[in-house]
Image (cartoon, rainbow, N blue to C red; front, top):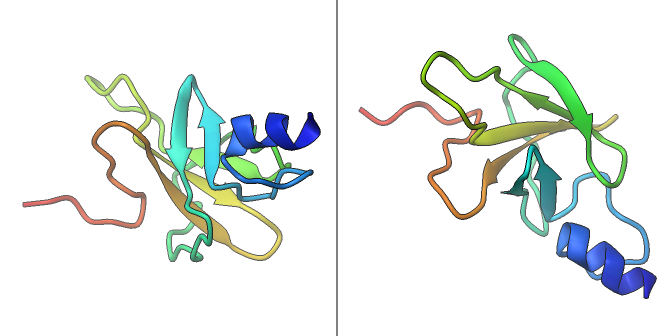
Length: 101
């Protein structure tokens, strides 16, 4: 039962959630960090701590600006590195990506 519960929360088949799980549930949405997330080069400058992953890592976001009502990416910070995760099921702009022109 524990294995199934963790899988429902994180998409990982483990008994305990990883700090950076494949899927992070935050603000009513699912964010894709991938099964083997690569460290991000994005700093925490200008970001706000807003939560924790199921595995206990910190979740940082860029505060939505005027006219932006949803968060499209999050940054997950562990003791080792930070990881960028984009929203699942919609347009995603990762925190360390530059805007399309």
